[in-house]
View 1 (tube, rainbow, N blue to C red):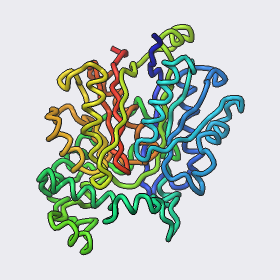
View 2: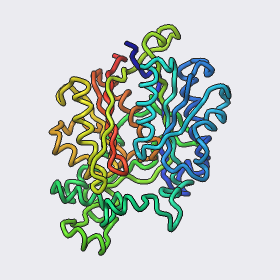
View 3: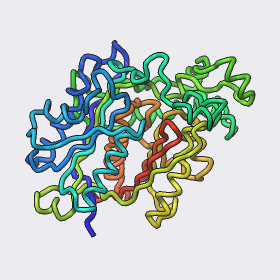
Length: 387
């Protein structure tokens, strides 16, 4: 049976998703093109050997419309004979791109494929693809959920209430994310661009005391009446910011890697995707973790490092309560609260960080999982091959 291995992984530093951010001046096509160019150059492969390029992007509108991945490949100067496609599984889009790429390699449909992602939230703000007054759900959803669904911030508040998470717990987790990210070395995975050489959202001086002074970010009287259990503890400080960035990984088989002289960094071991309650929305990481471990034939204790996307501190803390995972193994180089969360790029960014973290520690197994809008989650287990 064919396997799937990662032979190269690279990402841009993550910029603040604001007009003042360092990457605001870079068109998203060029942002991803830079990453693709760096990936192919670092791997030292002929770009015409790539069978497909699968990219993730969430707000596929305006400058991110019309199959951004295809135009990024062309903007990188690579052959027009190589196809490309852009997928959307919300925040897990580029993690899903990795799944599709690996599954294609394992099935024999591909020999060499790029999985990647991009999001420029400063140029294409979140929800740009839903014009004012548009209904993205339709009457069938309205009939099934007559009370309506809620924004992600409200879901994060509901999770906090259901798992009895205090404001202090969430702020302490968030301060820890910044501290870990500030102390981490990301140089092996970064491809600087537009003068940016480090992740722009990391705040090394962040403390629990500073975070405790922030006001709730999503407080709303209407939702307060509907959900009296909410105590309004989710703030900008214990939530991931908006960001710009891109990331890419190169995937092939061990056999093809040997033939091309490529060094496998990690084996893509097992995959899972789940659906969950669309009201809580962000808790799919819990069943996704259980499902991918079951498919892998592994136990929680077999996993050396976990990457659980820090969309909100409440998501990771609820996941920790439910799984019983060792917090010391989770997001060891910080997570999205500190590093940032450029939606379509985050899956590939996290994978790039996880591959390097396993290598740096000489650890064997890593598990990555991400919550996604609509009550979805991806989970991936990889095995370090880099020693």
